[in-house]
Amino acid sequence: TTENFQFTLKKTDAGARLGEVSMPRGTIRTPAFMPVGTVGTVKAMYLDQVRETGADIILGNTYHLMLRPTAERVARLGGLHKLIRWEHPILTDSGGFQVMSLSGLRKLDEQGVTFKSHVDGSLHHMSPERSIEIQGLLGSDIQMQLDECVALPAEPKEIERAMELSLRWAERCKVAFGNQPGKAMFGIVQGGDVPALRVRSAEELAKLDLKGYAVGGLAVGEPQDVMLKMLETTLPVLPGEKPRYLMGVGTPDDILKSVARGIDMFDCVMPTRSGRHGLAFTRRGKVNIRNARHAEDMRPLDEQSNCPATRDYSRAYLHHLVRANEALGGMLLSWHNLNYYQELMQGIRKAIAEGRFADFMAETIEEWARG
Ligand SMILES: CNc1nc2cc3c(cc2[nH]1)N=C(N)NC3
Image 1 (tube, helix red, strand yellow):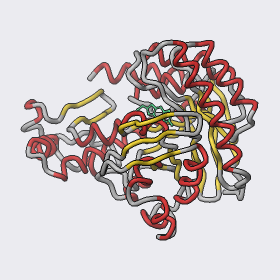
Image 2 (cartoon, protein in one colour; image 1 turned 180 degrees about the horizontal axis):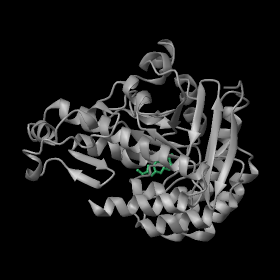
Image 3 (spheres, helix red, strand yellow; image 1 turned 180 degrees about the vertical axis):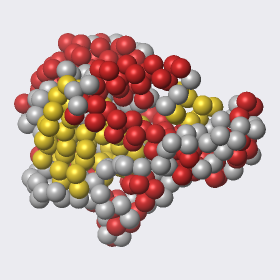
Image 4 (tube, protein in one colour; image 1 turned 90 degrees about the horizontal axis):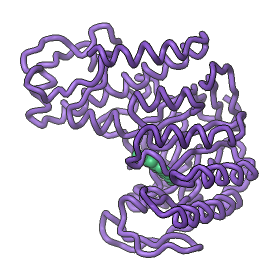
């Protein structure tokens, strides 16, 4: 680790990149999957287990934490890392996406957004400056700019207006963030599904010389081929020596195809949320453990795994727990899925290191299909 934020590109294999982000709190091996810890917890998991699965960094959310327990209280309690007992890096989203998707949005203007809390209906205002202030109070290592996310489909004029506002907010966030050597503020490329707007957003953000760049406004229900097309349009315009983060993505298939196009970092609720609903990701494809076919299947999900949830518990027991809506069901499947995602990332990193990523991707997708 270093006292500065440092991204090192170690190897490329066609479009895929092997790298690492070193920060005072630890090193992030990329391509990286970041478990989502929305309100200061990766749901149904102990953070020791999250670390054990191989996670180098987790996410927190400005929107949720500012509403409860509030950023000021987290700061009084010593910051998020101390409060939740995770001493490795934490990336916090800015609230841009959550305000649009979760709150009763009241007003959006040049200054910021005014919204009603989905927790208690109280009124809140968030400006780019306040979002960065909150992320600072939380002690976040990688802070995201405040952006305006437009739900697709949308009129190109509307997408352009939101993209240009997000660019102005990126500059204000850069000023508000100032100079914090061991930390980083990432910009977020917007532009919806309009290639020319994506390119302009990426070009303008690149001029700000930020520490890293996220591709946002995707994984909002658009088809995978549209998402991949936007990556092919956007990534070549972003500086190659900076990390690229695809927000909210995704399934194992999304991740493989996005790594192939040059994405370094991912976050998604998929492994934890679907685990709580009884869906297991495995090397042989998805297993809906609720399905009656598992009721007396004494096999574990994968006897070769080193994860206890995957190796030691029968599908029959997992089926029973999920059908009975028992907490242990969601706990074991979240643990299994996070471990599967990290094993996938480990396989991806190894394949890039050995110059065989294309084969790894084809073989992995083929094995899922075999079922
Ligand atoms: C689940 N899909 C998803 N797309 C996203 C897109 C964004 C985001 C979070 C997301 N999650 N956070 C932002 N601040 N902006 C863009």
